Image 1 (cartoon, rainbow, N blue to C red):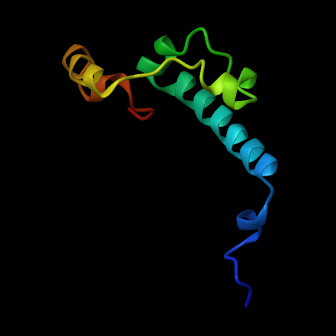
Image 2 (image 1 turned 120 degrees about the horizontal axis):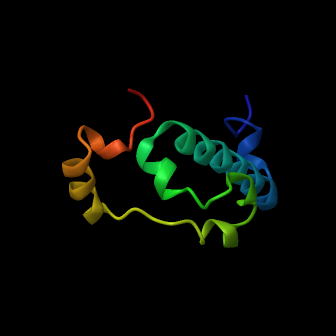
Length: 84
């Protein structure tokens, strides 16, 4: 038995960051393709361009305080879900 759950726990910082950014790009593409709110909110975002933490910082955000308006204008769940 090893001291680590799997090899991901011992990867380098750059490898971990690359893996996380790749997962984020997949998630952004999925959200744009399947959630009405994110289709509009991320319309100017190319998921494939998010290749660094600096690029991550440029993404538009949704604040918690926005959620009640989203819910009121587009029930249920404000268009945030990716499933019907």
